[in-house]
Image 1 (cartoon, rainbow, N blue to C red):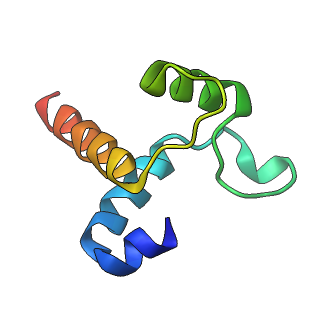
Image 2 (image 1 turned 45 degrees about the vertical axis):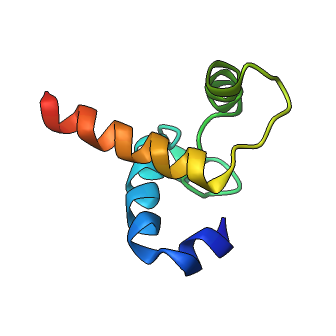
Length: 76
C-alpha cells in the first residue's frame, strides 16, 4: 500500500478517507487504539469483493473501491 501512495499521493488521500469511514465505532476504547475496521466486517468486505476468504486486494482494487465509495457518497 505504501508503494501505491508513494506513486500516486492523490489516490492515497482518497483511500485514507474511505478507510476512515470503515473504522470500528469506539476504536479509542480498545487496543490497539487505532481506527481500524472490525475484523468480522473486514472479512465480510473481502469475501464480497473478491470471492475468497484469504485474499488481499491490490492497490488498484483499493483505489477503485475508494473512488466508487466517494462517488456514491456524493449522490446521496
